[in-house]
Length: 296
Image (cartoon, rainbow, N blue to C red; front, side, top):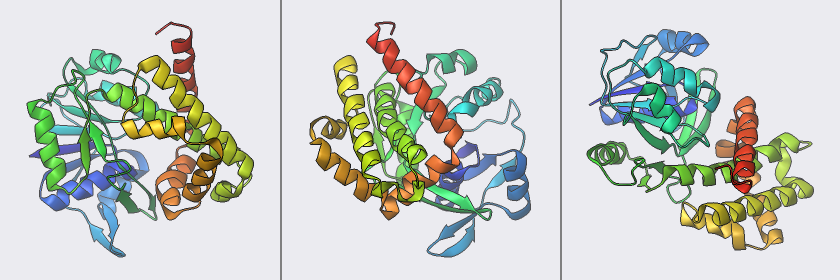
C-alpha cells in the first residue's frame, strides 16, 4: 500500500506519522521551509512526551508515473486549486481531499479528472513547534475522520480507505453526502474562528461574555438556515445547535473555549490559519446569500 501525503502541515504530518507507524509505505510531498526541515531532520513528532521520527520518504516533486494507492490532499483551502493543478497529470486514481470548502467537488474533478476525487475531512489538530509535530486525533465521538463518495454509495475504494484508517487506529465515519457535511462543519468552525479574531484577548475569549453570546447566536442562525435550505444536517447531532437555549449554548461555549480541547483543536488552528479562515468566512456567508436568493 503506497500512500502520498500532499501537504506537510499539522494534518498531513500527523496522518503520515500514523500511517507509517502502521507499516504503510508513506511519502510526504512538501515545499519551502517545511521541506528543508523534513529533508534535514525528518518528520519528528511527540508521542507520550517523547520525540519520535516517522519512517516516511520526503519528496519535492511528483512525477506523472509515480503512482500511489491513495493521495491525501491536506492543504489549506487557499492552496487547493494550485495543488489540484499539480496533481492533474499524475496517474494515481484516488485523491482524498481533506480540505475545508463550500465547493461541491465538480470544479475539482474538472481540473484533475472525473472520478478521482474522494471527499473527506480530518479529525485532528495541534501545532508544529520547533519543527516538532504536537498533534492529536480529535475524539471519535466529537469528530472522526469523515469521508464519502459523491454518489453517496459505498465503493471498493471507500471500503479500502476504511480499512487503512482502522488499521491505523484512526476513528472514521462514512457519510452519504460530504458536501452537506462540509457545509455543516463550516457553519460551526467559521463562527468559532470569528470569536478568536474579534476577542480582546483571543487566548481567553471564553471569558468574554459578549463574544460567547454573539457566537452562540451565529451558530443557531447558521444551522437553522442550513436545515431550512438543505433539508438535513450532517452529522445529525448538529441539530443540537437549533434547539439548545441561547444562554445554555453560550455557557457551554465558554467551557469549551477555555478547555485544553479548545486550545489544541480550535485556538491553535484559528490563530495560525487566519488568512484561510477569513477567506472561508467570506465564502461560506456568500454561499448562504446565494442560497437565500435562489441562485443555488
